[in-house]
Length: 136
Image (tube, rainbow, N blue to C red; front, top):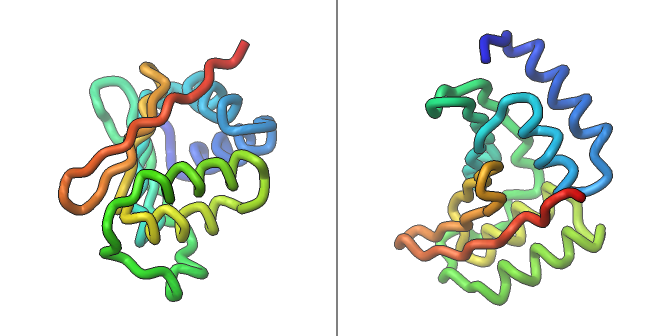
């Protein structure tokens, strides 16, 4: 995909506005040519990749609210699952989800839009994989 940063920002805005939940967001993002993306929790940097692992776009997100989060906590799968459930139920926004996952020991995660899996990783190589429900 050969697209300018401004054009991809517009695509992201449209995808986000048209997606009623995360499975639809992932599906809509996949339709734009994104194969997978990675998120660095502490910096909220999201890198989107296309075919052949070519970087399509790097989004620098807000780190607002991250000051109170404590990085370096032990990896805790139960806390990750609780953060996911709270976010899926609409009780937290994406920024709070990042804080909650950082507090659960997650340093980064990758979302593979082909296999429909998200791999949450800790500082010592720990991993928790969550499936992304397919859109009917």
